[in-house]
Image 1 (spheres, rainbow, N blue to C red):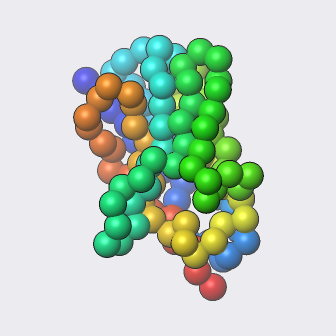
Image 2: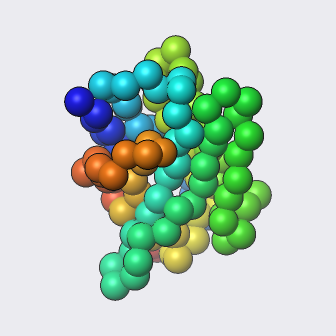
Amino acid sequence: QVQLVESGGGLVQPGGSLRLSCAASGFVFSNYIMSWYRQAPGKERERVATIDAYDGITNYIDSVKGRFTISRDNDQNTLYLQMESLKPEDTARYYCKRRNYDGWGQGTQVTVSS
């Protein structure tokens, strides 16, 4: 059974950094494209970043380009999101997601505020 467990969120001041982790289990992690999504209060969930399964190709929404970095450790079955220069508009609950799987983990809350 697929499990995705996000962690690493918290309260950070504008300009600060956080590193999110997603521990994956129940499937062959290295075979799947993985993504980070976020959902802010009153807004739809949006895909923030994606990383390919084998070649590590990444893509990002414009608002996080140059600030966020998605990566993966296929040996540890873990997905990461390094977030730098955080802004208040990055405040949201962040989720990791596996391609071709409809389920979601519990997410991890990121709050950027002074």
